[in-house]
Length: 80
Image 1 (cartoon, rainbow, N blue to C red):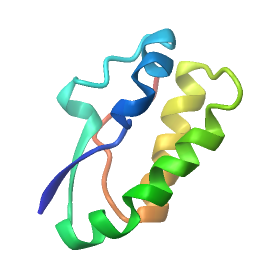
Image 2: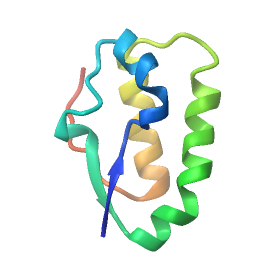
Image 3: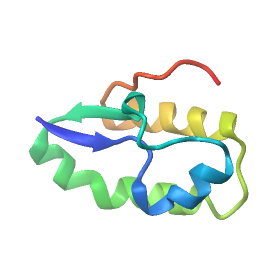
Image 4: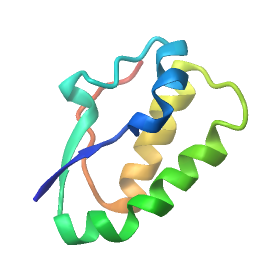
């Protein structure tokens, strides 16, 4: 298993603007290491596309939940 940043660090400024501390442990998850390395580029590309528009905290957390289902890992944060 490997630690996964549900909210990718490369978009930290976007998360801060929305009032989200990406370093809060609730925004981490454990994933299979091999699978993680296989999909992390595509996962981050989806975030890049998502942030082409300014987003609210609720939109960000809902998007993270959708991606977690798509990529098969659990998130540990509640509703905004």
